[in-house]
Length: 303
Image 1 (cartoon, rainbow, N blue to C red):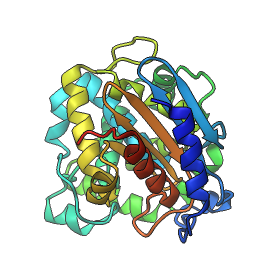
Image 2: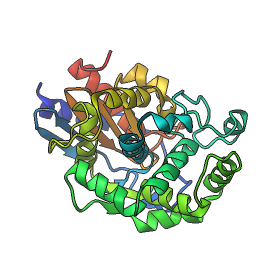
Image 3: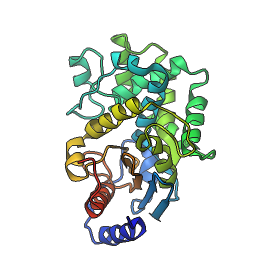
Image 4: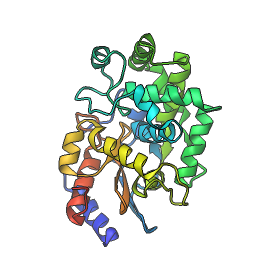
């Protein structure tokens, strides 16, 4: 497969699109990003790397991090985590309180905010130094020791935390948060603030496409666990646009309001895109288009 040529074709075709998306306004620090940035990187299972555009510029991965926190929790808690968070698509806003009340404090899945906050609570309980341990995990799976939190973004999230604080307190009222609310929120904000390049993000997701093994050969999850998390990303990874992404692109993946998307074709490749302009559902508009073009041109999707 001539990935380099395909990336060039995608890059040219994207330039002709009329993009109407906007930067997120929910986190003030993210609204300062250049809206015209675009990067894309492909890492193949046989060890090849191909990048284009701003693929080596760092950005805040935001909710893409939720796939990595649930992987870390799954690695030592296994099926126990599903007692506190579900595996069903939400069909509602990613920060909905209404659905959480209706379902008695058990979030639909680990990729909506409530679910990711419950996963954060699990990590705060089981990790000795939660923020540093999570950072060490990301650095290990990516092979990049320079990955870090963006403290300005984390503070910006804390300053505008009202909805997430409400969700966390609501979860606490149902007994589904075991630690101090502010401690859990602090971890969650730092988790979302993590900065990576498209290349680093693709490498971080490599184990999802490689039967649980990182590029360096470290077994992070079992094949069975990876199968389950890939299924979750397929059905729940793009907020309430997951069905649309499956229809158009046909890959499991996870998006974030920082404009990043990580997706994968098991046993073949991992791809990461970054473009900060978001559509109305909170997903990167150019990223969605780029990934649709990729699976169309390669003929490679899980379907």
